[in-house]
Length: 339
Ligand code: KG4
Ligand code: ZN
Image (cartoon, rainbow, N blue to C red; front, top):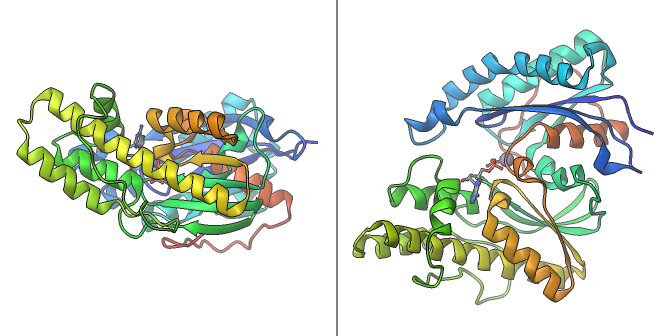
């Protein structure tokens, strides 16, 4: 039996996301009622990165219209809601406060339970929004702009971080490498598009930290290798595509090696990939192939739910509220928060 719809709000960085999700543990992939997303990418493009003050202001401008639109799309009104969830961290403090304040105010006014959700738990649960979702236990590879993590998920809320990034996150490596090759913001998806036109074997970059045991990641050295290769090259269009392709292949193989290791270490046979870098086509293809060859199942959220969105926050909130985990009415965020 589905719970009453939970309104979810994501505003931790540069996307305003709103969604409505009902939760039924017996039908996990069927609870998404509606979702809307507004990306601030254009706003920040001139600055080459997210400007926190501008991000907060734009969330203020867009959030309530998106709430209205999401309810309309689902054919629901505020009175139909059963709870409110919002991203409480990690993220930009001002941006988080916009979502937290609006969510708490709506919950207060409607006398509804509300909960602050961990952004990475949202990413981690996003594959459950798909038809035929994976059930725990599974290994989660979380690769976003701020995180590269391997997590053993033994149940919802039962997470063990197996490996983490020691420096740049995978998405950060994509973004910084794109920038140093002169590609426009936002770098990751642009570099990935370049890489599709290149030869992944033309340049060989290291697979960092794969030559020793362990599940941690380090991607900052890769960026320096690319810079050296790029500066020595003829900087032609084709070279740019080849370097991008070699870089992407190095990241994808490194992630794949560590995923395999994590599956072996935990004895688990299901792998989920989530977070913005999970939208990378080569990563998706190569991991799916490895899974088929080696006998583990691989699950991804649909492309639009790899990057930041409200649906994953509504889902995580709906699950936690169904478990009775509502919190008091304080407006509290946690810009730094480990999973
Ligand atoms: O999950 P997300 O939207 O936000 C964070 O929580 O960080 O992830 C954004 C990151 C950015 O670093 C972006 O460059 C990267 O995900 N990204 C990609 C692709 N699409 C987004 N990286 C590689 N290939 C892509 N197709
Ligand atoms: Zn994210």
